[in-house]
Length: 119
Image (cartoon, rainbow, N blue to C red; front, side, top):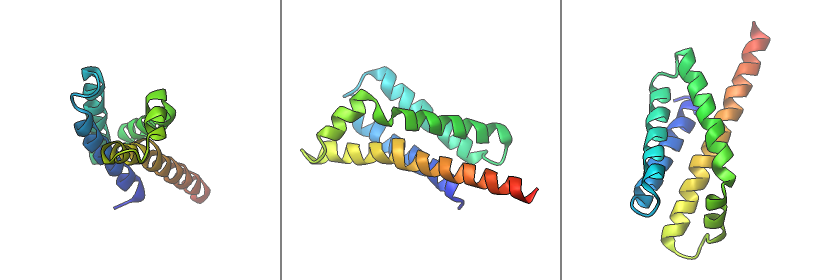
């Protein structure tokens, strides 16, 4: 599996697990938004060979990366290690909003740059 597809799948899985863990803890609109994000990530993963879905994946990953430093996430990161539940959520958050989107963007743009050179 290509690294970009693996990054999309990783974000979707991390978001799904984190969303499930936070169900009933956060407002409903955040749970629905997470479910929508997971669905869009899986859709872009399934149809990544089509250009519009590559662009959808690109936008979604920029949005995920932008929310890495959301105040709610930062306050959760500050409580890292206080208990197992918050630590698991922090790890999932870092993976879903940081590591996987950053991996996707780096690989996506490096492949694009190398494809331009070969044309």
